[in-house]
Image 1 (cartoon, rainbow, N blue to C red):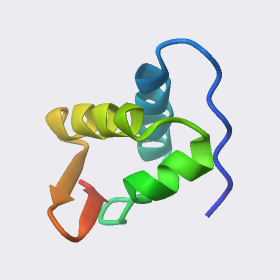
Image 2 (image 1 turned 180 degrees about the horizontal axis):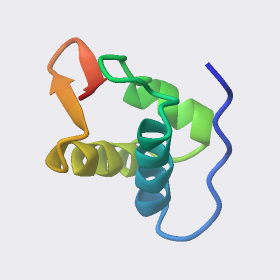
Image 3 (image 1 turned 90 degrees about the horizontal axis):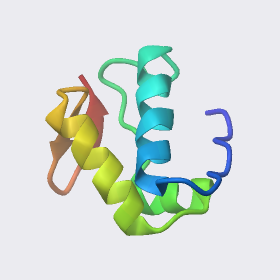
Image 4 (image 1 turned 45 degrees about the horizontal axis):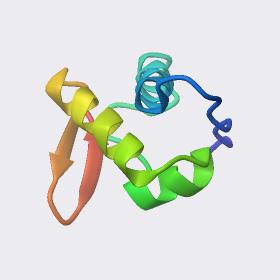
Length: 76
């Protein structure tokens, strides 16, 4: 998997959301593929876990990912 860029100041959760959404739309995260965990994304992007949680929840609400408790988040 290619390295994700660090996130600059602005609404951090919005930036994380936009980045992950773009990766899904561009096919960098493919349908059925498990996206990195919240902890992995926190380390990769250099942002707080609440920012990741908010972004992942928005992706779920939009129907772009499916969250499987205890397993991870998968691209729909």
